[in-house]
Image 1 (tube, rainbow, N blue to C red):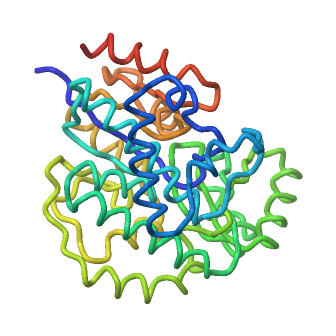
Image 2 (image 1 turned 180 degrees about the vertical axis):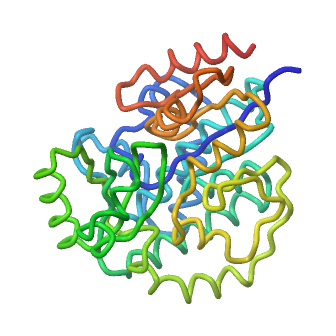
Length: 316
């Protein structure tokens, strides 16, 4: 049997200015979809997200971190790329999101009309902006470090485990500064993510009550694609009323989800996120004997079109 295709969607921290610019400038359908989605978002917030993503005044290296813009920006890029792949006849058997990347999973799997998903996405972004400022820190070390070191477990919250030597913590700015000093002293590599909220931690609880009450008014259909939950680390059959809150509040179980998938089969994983992050994480999770294939398309290094054609030639 041919390998099943999994569309993967990354979340906060994978964004940057000019992401997907190669496709935006050179691929007509991708560009059209970005404008189409931008029109929906701007109708909600009264501002153009395109002007944020592709601002000529911004360098790729500058921080792109305001949640009101980054939430829709990530979603727009992922859904525009999804439309490109679907138009080329590449359809997923599974969708697999990480953190707010699960909004794209929800949209791709048809649990609600696109406009409804975007409305929920923006309500969440607006609610999160009212939370205390915080951040997230990716740590390149075994997750046991979190539990064994008081500096980490007493001053931050575990936000997710991506592979055997990569986990993420969330906390307030002062706590993260102290943790960074600790990591430097131990010569442990880390990366501060470009976010202004401490996603997957109690610091975003102030957004939860209002947002969960808002979600309770919504109706979700059964996913039309097999749905791999990044927050539960396994396949789920239904989207609960609180699910689109849980994806940003609970820890991410990316590694657990990949292990569950790889127990039974081999797959073609396609990373539709803006940075190719999940494709990288996946390579560190796959066993040497796995016949699964991984493709990233958009990366900070450009060559998006080349990567798209490479994947297209392999599949078609």
